[in-house]
Image 1 (cartoon, rainbow over the protein chains, first blue to last red):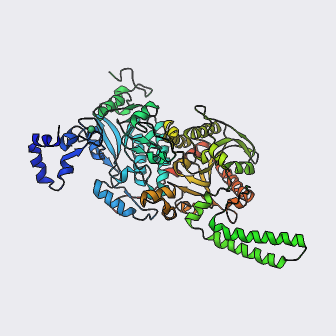
Image 2 (image 1 turned 45 degrees about the vertical axis):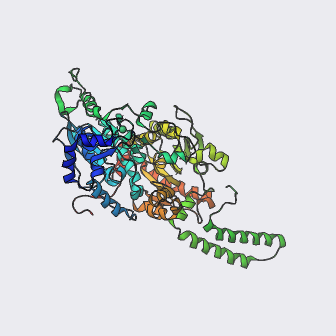
Image 3 (image 1 turned 90 degrees about the horizontal axis):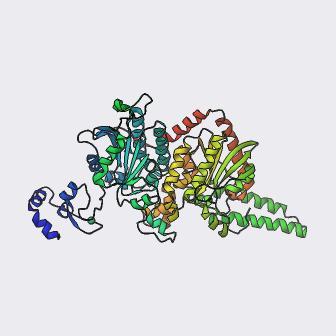
Length: 301
Length: 325
Ligand SMILES: [Zn+2]
């Protein structure tokens, strides 16, 4: 379908949006798919969970949209929303970058964390937002990850973290960002010792320090189709004069190499989480647990 | 010590003066003439000059010293600090990574496990050791040896000196990020003392992958950074040649890290840097290792795990509440 045809076929939406967002018509109404080039009508794209209607390309989505896609309506309670970054290194321009990112994203830092229900099952949920400085991990993201884990342990709830941070560790917080890798991984070890489920969802892009810490340590690692996931950036690797194989560092590539458990289409993500959660009953649904704290033989019935 | 003529720009005046002193001494012997006054005067000046240069190093100069090709590497330290080192190889899955060495050794008669990142001394060895940049199998070997140490109650000493974990296709295919993350997770559970010494370059996640210690020591001119100053400059100012400026911003020296409590103690280097006196540097590292090991040995396994966890749990700085900026 050509751009003009699509435009004409939905005149009502055009009028509505024109009145509210006059200046942003091209971006607000139409989005071009970076993979197949198709012009996509914004509302339709949103209704389609930001997946290209033509080629199934999964657009990056912000943390709030992600939460509304995964968590039962009206059940999400945000925690630690007041945490804000400092400039511990006095890194030139960091404060400006932070306030700009806060304006662009409407968030105080690159992660939203809280508790919510997934088909009626409670979980601690954290989502990293790419719109905030590339979803990079500084002290605030590290602390929020750890507090989410601590909350999981305290309430015996499963943990779900959706990572989509291209930047990995946040450079402007220097060594303290690097230490968040140690801090979050150490906390995952505690979660694991408490025998609590951790599902890590890797979305486009999950790189560097985020992937080299909590994001790769899920009991179950799930990736979205086509997501770029890796340790080093492709440009750095090209400097080693190695020719990159096709599909290098995509979710499918990682699946093939045994690094993740599955690639799940965004439309099936919430249902997949539900199924996995059902396999891991805990004390919050007492009838599923036998006297040893293990799932009863009837847990799935 | 290697005798290649390499030296850094700012080392030059001192090295030239030392050469003059050496020449004069040789001349004295050969010609049987007395230049002792002149020599004493020059030696005093050399000493002053050394203090001037090395008492006020910029962050970038420390980066250069940390990367000095003549700097002692892990195997040099192992030879000078430990006895009866037996190197153990392989990750039991893929191959032996020569960029990380490890094994069992004695430290003043006490059995320990030593693990270190190893750079090459010349081009040939550097290619074999991949310039000290480990692959996932290197981190997996390190973890295997750490778990072995845990099993047999041996303290673990990790020597950190790497530009980075290797950014290559094979490394990605075999899960570089996952290998590092697994190490971080598993190192928190070790019930034996873990002492880390950053001796040269603490290159980001590549360094951290063996650096989750109860105690983290740094040599005076070592660095430890979230990314190399060159990459930082390329990202922020789109100009990799501004590395000197980036080094200032990144606050990556041992002195900076002491303020952030990421390192517990700075080990002073001989005047001019570790490469000017391997033995003296090793003596100082050994003293610190024995002292910390003594303290850590008084703790139970549970305490060691808890203390190590708390140390890293509390890292980071942020505002909480409405008072924030
Ligand atoms: Zn498309």
